[in-house]
Length: 238
Ligand code: URA
Image (cartoon, rainbow, N blue to C red; front, side, top):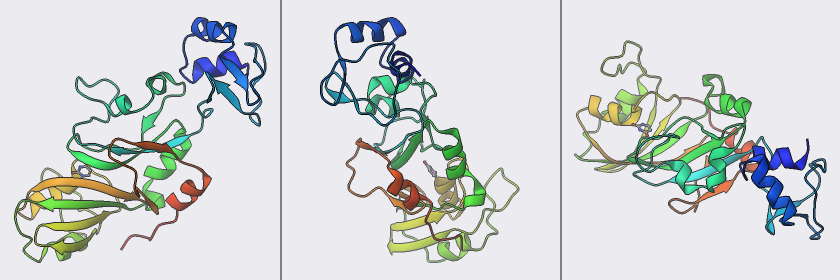
């Protein structure tokens, strides 16, 4: 593929705008040698755009620490998770999608990728990747929630199929860590509503074996090969 087409696909601008960047000498190799629009892209070489490393070619993934108040959508009226990323990420082809969703009022680990196969592998029930949430509750836990959630018999309101067993570790009266091996609409909030409680704060810390770590609120980073291996190394369902 020509570098011109690649840069346009990576959201750096329209073909015309990218053409102008080449004319300005904004695209160089690692030694600062100017590249030309019809040079072929060589994946082994480092390209710089305005002196910064070019974004990854298609087939990449990132992890974002989603703050409260942001929506996992490309066109909601309020603040979008895409607003926390370089603006060009919104214009990449193939598209950068969220891997599942977090509610507007939920914070924590959100994975995003433009790789449809990777996305499918992460969300596929066959891979049993757990998701771990820190939950803050309005009322003290009554002590039977862990057994109810682990039973595999809890049916949420307006559903007919029981939830898969989930693991609840109680931290104190109003704080717990919940591990889920599935993802239904507003699942954590609805599970606690089903046992007479109310979630006041919800934060995802882990997907599969991959932890959010010390990524600050609103910050993101690229995932590398080691991260992706870690992601798929996870304890199996209970
Ligand atoms: N469960 C919820 O209720 N909300 C989320 O955002 C994720 C899981």
